[in-house]
Image (tube, rainbow, N blue to C red):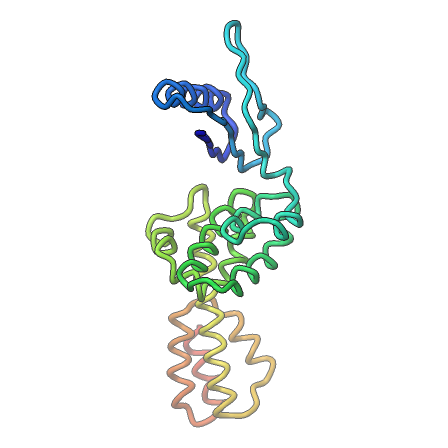
Length: 233
């Protein structure tokens, strides 16, 4: 038996014709029974499971991920299919749970990285924010994926590239701020809330690194505040 699975991000009226073309080609060349199916990643009211014209009537299986229940899928699907969960009904809300499942799964680190990166890309089909949330939580392991490097070089389709860059930049800012505050606390024990607020307002990684070097050398927290005012001026 031959299974022809046409995977489509969005519906197009010509998709059934392409599927019919593949079906006929395989019937002629292989002579085996054929199951024809379309896996539709995004919801679309125009999608249908049949094609008809004045001469041809063709029915096939249409799998709409958006109508499948993510709660059931989490319980029943094999781990390798979990990156599709954000596309399912209730999927976006359950994505953090799926991240943890993948993260805790007894599989290689590279496989986990590939799965999380794949889920991030697929999540971009239904949400602008969701890929950034996944990235912010799981970037530590996603950087192990070859696909992650490709994404950094080529960018996500339809605006995800900008989102990933913003996420990476935000992650760098957060890490730099935390490192700066840690060294201040280690050296001077107490850091006033007003100073923490000033540091939190900085959105330049280079400035934060400069302040980190200053924090290692200044004799007092007051001196650091003076240098801070000079650097961010």
